[in-house]
Image (cartoon, rainbow, N blue to C red; front, side, top):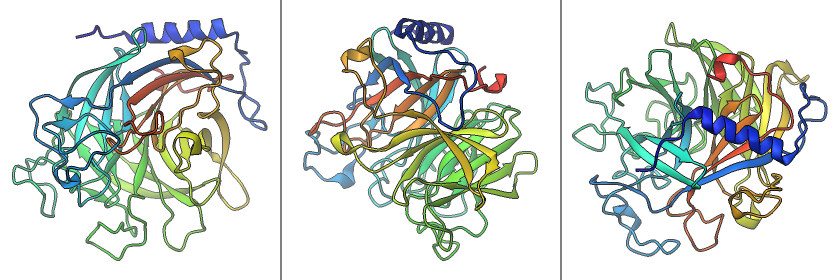
Amino acid sequence: MRRTVAYAAIGATVLAAGVLAGMPSSATPDHGRGFGQATLTAFAALPAETFVSASDPSGAALGTTPVNGVVPPFADQPVQGFSGIVRNGDGTFEVLSDNGYGTKANSGDFVLRIHRIAPDFGQGAVDVLGGVNLTDPNRKVPFALTRPDRVLTGSDFDVESIVRAADGSYWIGDEFGPYLLHFDRAGRLLAPPVPLPGVFAPENPAGTPNLGGSKGYEGLAISPDRRTLYALLEGTVAGDAAGTLRLNEFDLGSGAYTGKRWTYQLDQPNHAIGDLTAVDKDRFLVIERDGGQGVDAKVKKVYLLDKRDRDRDGKIDKVLVADLVNLANPRRVGGFADPFTFPFQTIEDVVVLDDRTLGVLNDNNFPFSSGRTPGKPDNNEFITIRLTDRLHADPRVLR
């Protein structure tokens, strides 16, 4: 097993890279113009064909036709689809696999799981250190599950976002409800799924659908004081203005939505969001993307939001922080050209590493996406990028 890289070492590596690249260090961003061109500072990748050893078979519903050169089904569970990330204090991260192979119908043998990973940027690799399966042993889910042992699968929930509460438990955002799901640190569901009042995805049996499929909680952030969740839908609720997404506030003390809501406006109605993370009690980073990959990947952006600032229509102001298909790479990090592009269809993880450094990961949709090399399944890549301006983040976010 490769050694685990301490978080301090990651921070030092990234900082040194920024100095070597000769990047500006202005203290306060000009919100009128946005930030300047961000710079790639580190690169690591987990091979696409990485599996949980001695686990259950998976992918039976995919048939046996090769996909990007990979032949399903699989003898074990793929380590794939990183759709959410939580930073630990030792250089490791918890990452969330999504619902498996893209639909409720074909993901019944994909086990939902939180993986622990450690990037080794010196070697350009990612170590998988372990993880926990998501389960419902205490029968909190009120509807029938796929497996009689109550191990949760991609036919039960489409988990896409994750945060860790002050007590070490996890809150996870789902798209099939959309629901908020509360798990203990061993992956056991602690309470019934919490629905969003008045909003129903097609997979939700409790009401008439007014949200598109796979358009539920793609983004979930927790406030620095660990008292409040902010859950962002990926799709527009029927009757709302085109390209607007609801950002909902949830109070952890009462276990209920507060009724406060904000509106995020996509650049184009056919775009989607990939992740949401808090910078302080009022500001968030969000990934906005188009559906393209490879040469067709045009919009993969990280924006800074401030829920205190709204335009005349009540929509949250946003400032461009980084364009992920146009990152400066003067040192040719990872052996890539300058500029560097992160050309994936789904980029679903952003994490604050220090006040000017972000970690960004893709969801490789194994075995379907092939944005890096046509005809080959994408790896799960982990990059760090250096911003031209400080975020002025709450110190609790940086711990």
